[in-house]
Image 1 (cartoon, one colour):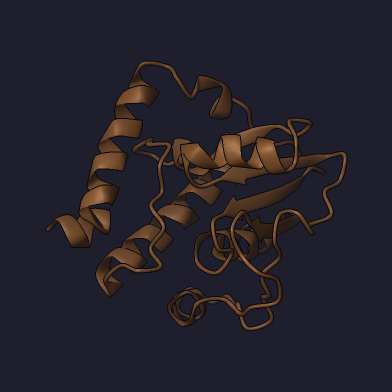
Image 2 (tube, rainbow, N blue to C red):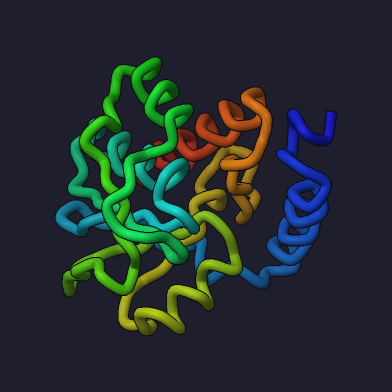
Length: 175
């Protein structure tokens, strides 16, 4: 059950740890702001192959300008095959997606940055700076939790669960 619901034991611990910190208000500044029309949503995750590319194409399908990049990836790699299949099942395509490392991404003055995990906030600020509003994607889900686990090395059931949470977060952000 742990693997299907949380991806791994570590994912289970992080989900509850970050959830408790959120209840204490630790991440309030990363979950209270809504993007404004005209702002580009920039979705950031670790590898830019599972979570952030799906968030990008889903936000675009909802009429928002969106892009994505990764904190710990190389450039020009395709999306994960399971992410491509999942997107296709939702009526979207990740076939043209190519990874971009956050250090090579061109940020604009009006970007609204959305990260998938609390640890991504400090990593992003270290690599890019703190000139951009940053939000935690999971804080915009119906059942708020600031942590959306990386599904890359997880079972298919959890992978799909995670990608559904990413889509729910985008709906919450764009709604």
